[in-house]
Length: 461
Image (cartoon, rainbow, N blue to C red; front, side, top):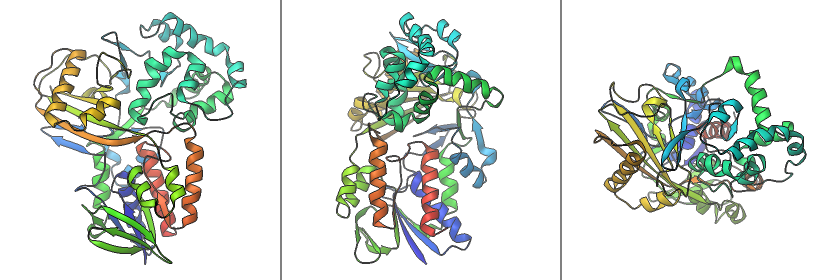
């Protein structure tokens, strides 16, 4: 019987444990122990269901075009639970000079597909609109000038559209997902499809227009989730994992390897395993690997930012702009929030009839300051900031606060090269895998894909 240790019970660790349990049920000679330092599994994936509200404490959905989360949900028997975002009314706003200004229709991240909608938009200056239109005519120039080496997101976007687009859309869009400074974020790691478009077409606008035309009859919603919340994935997987495999409040203090098996040390003692999956946060993984593989651990040094989420359920109708929510450009003096979501407008069945559900998101320096604040202090500030943007709000019937320290690793320029070197060194150790959002993708589908693949490799299936 092959024994596998899984260190960390976030979605990557739980997925790996579930996949191993499924393989064992189908005859594979494998068993696992999942070590989780806290009192619950799921990590930042957590759904609170209370008083008719469904509040996501972390990610609220996954990107539809990546198939791995949907495939898992269907295999778990959750096919009927899968729902799409309400894209018929999809609109995102940017806070500019104290008011919410809608992004033009047809935007994919910071690239427009509908230039007529762009011209009608009040979000961009005439100079920025001219830069968008001019980018199409520069297709050959941009294709010839495509960078041979990695570069920052800021450099890439500015080369195509200018600084205004970087500051107004690029920075707030990416800061909440990758937790980074666009002047440091690797464009090849976080915007790989756009890099490929530049190499093929030069113009990103032209590339997306062609793609939109080709896929006009197959258009899918941008986001997908589950009716009962993303946490349903965790709950369904846990139900398929033998209870004896899960050890809560069991922080791993050290990882060792002598001549044979891997040795995992917790406060309860030591145990031996044939293979180890380290699905803990990067900082924890680096500390565990340091004594064994110092060169690999050195490659795991990366900046990360924190997040603070404040969810509010209101038993009253509130007049909100149509759409999904808003972004606040970092560094803005207008709000400490990085983003706000009109949750019940983004997804169905998130609030009782006649009620509203809002979520505020703090990132960067604001989140770091708030990590030590009380729930009451965070809620008070979040409501104040939301009201300054949206107008008066009633007292919430439900408040949910979550802090996620250093939860968003920054994929800096050169990230892909560093990861290739890191995984080469880790593979040479034999019997160890690195899982989680610090390496090959931060979205739920990416984490699920890697965890399932690692489980199959570890089991020999």
